[in-house]
Image 1 (cartoon, rainbow, N blue to C red):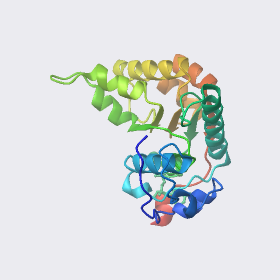
Image 2 (spheres, rainbow, N blue to C red; image 1 turned 90 degrees about the horizontal axis):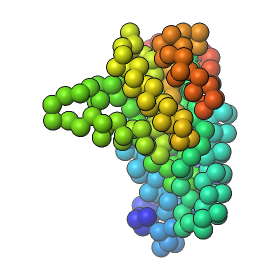
Image 3 (cartoon, protein in one colour; image 1 turned 45 degrees about the vertical axis):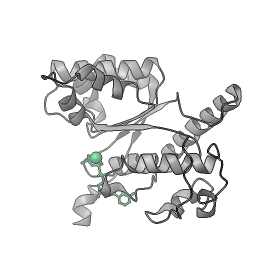
Image 4 (cartoon, rainbow, N blue to C red; image 1 turned 135 degrees about the vertical axis):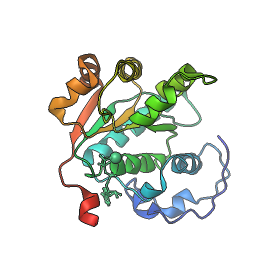
Amino acid sequence: MQYIPPSRLRGRDLEPLLASRGRDLAWINENDFDSHSPANVARNCYGETMNKVPFHYRTARPSLPQLRTWIDTLVADALERQTERDAPIASIVNGPSLLLLGVTGVGKTHEAYGAMRELSLSGVYGQWEVTTAADLYAALRPRHGVDSEAEFRRYRNARLLLVDDLGAERKPTEFTEEINFRLINWRYENHLPTLMTSNVEPKDLAARLGDRVISRLAEMCQRIPMKGNDRRRSAA
Ligand SMILES: Nc1ncnc2c1ncn2[C@@H]1O[C@H](COP(=O)(O)OP(=O)(O)OP(=O)(O)O)[C@@H](O)[C@H]1O
Ligand SMILES: [Mg+2]
């Protein structure tokens, strides 16, 4: 792990985010010259994670208790694995998944990026790949000069994966069904932590994603229904 000297990290609602992990700015900015220290892991991880968080969600913080429990589980598992293997740093490898469900604008994406940000400050290393389902399908469409399978494996094998807006396409096609199945099946079989959001109504999920995907999701992830109105309209 690269040693990153403290750069007086602040702003972007960092303090309350650190506080929710029982840490503070002094902790993350401590200059201990130890590349394996949890604070250095957090500096690395926060920087990498923020590169994947869109500008709009740069100050997002999770508000749902289920997300905090999920983060706690991932962190505890990583610490246990570190102790078992006597590893220099704790890294997230396996764990449960989550599916955030709710209407347009209720705050699913905000919660997801908030969870990414909070997890990055835990002192445990976790590397994210992030995509919307629509962008994933577009990136994987077979086309000249692009190795779509290599691209697929990047998402399939990601240590932590956010798939935003699952099932948002108007009409599922054979292609989107196959991608959904291959992706979810791999992550299910390997217990790879996956954060998903969808604004499809729970009763329509099976029709959108197919029974085999739904069956795997039922076992691998907790469904979190989010209640509320479209926050964008309320803000406007
Ligand atoms: N807890 C929150 N605190 C402050 N702002 C929030 C919160 N949750 C959501 N928002 C804001 O509300 C708006 C809608 O949130 P978001 O983009 O997460 O919705 P969504 O459920 O992902 O919608 P869609 O289904 O259209 O993708 C955004 O501007 C977001 O920043
Ligand atoms: Mg969204």
